[in-house]
Length: 488
Image (cartoon, rainbow, N blue to C red; front, top):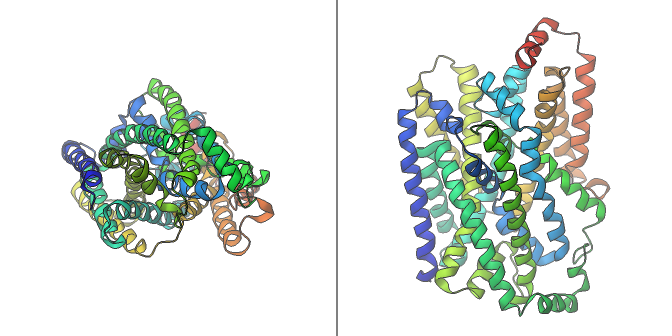
């Protein structure tokens, strides 16, 4: 084993564990366990909000899978990846202040809390919870795979042993520390991601003989590597444009991102987060994907794309520095895993158990069940990740698309369109998820676009049409909702 690499990484894991232990004291003292465990008592400042959004969105697919695809396809994938630049800014601009105000007014702890109060429908809640569990299991499996492969690459341990080390580390601090531990570690991880990207980009450029030499060698190998269309000419303008929906504007529909818009302290924190988050995510996404392309010259012949980042770090940096830098993708993976774990457990405990199974549950019962369910979910995902796909980015993007098809219009139109109702929301979710699964399984990338585009469009049509057709049903209940949300 290369202990120069391993020791800095495990030092990072130890720090994360200490943060979880520190945060657990807030859970013990909190007057409202659910508010603290799942939302950090809504006390995020601007800097932490920005970095927790960046770290949550910057996942294994961004730091491991994305650079691996860029290694194979070239600069065209870098162009596609930059559609993520607007993510944090756009999410907070659209949801931001209004979502936070409404969430506080109705005392919403989770995204489904908002949907429950907005639509007053058990079926909307249950379909929402089911969608979160199904698609976030896929997303978490992708992160577990990324963490396992990362540790496997630089320790020489088997994939299963590496996966076990990663899963154990994450479960400990999430289970005992809750959302506050997640937010604080996300801030640390965001800083590590930024510094790691900078150091590795510099090291890769130096090892490749400079940007000019790298570009020349890429062009000699295959001119399409330095074109917008990809080495296999698969990145058509329509396909690249469709990714602006998947990883750009559509991110509003991701529960793990949307819930951040509930958790900040005040509007000043939100505005600061919009600026800081945009700058940080822009640099990290550009840097990491450029590293993936440049690595083709520095470390040719890598067969498994998800191993590009650890292998290039070990090639271009001294061992001790590689260990520090490799904490960046580890941070990205862990920061996403922790958020997804809390979301799935909150969907099971808060949104189903407390709302419909046992509304009279005591704080102690809810606390014990939340911790237990979070641990059980982590173990189940670990078992799913034992036999991974070659490119985990596709597993992650599959989950992204499904969640966006389910939630984008019930969230956005639920905030801004008074005529939207439970029938429209349920139809939108059913049409979005159903069409997404059908297209993904039968004709993926229909018309040369990413699979998510048509389901998002169909779910919008379903929401609007069904809401208008059924607007005369349950008028009294609907007026009460309008009064509560808009005060008129």
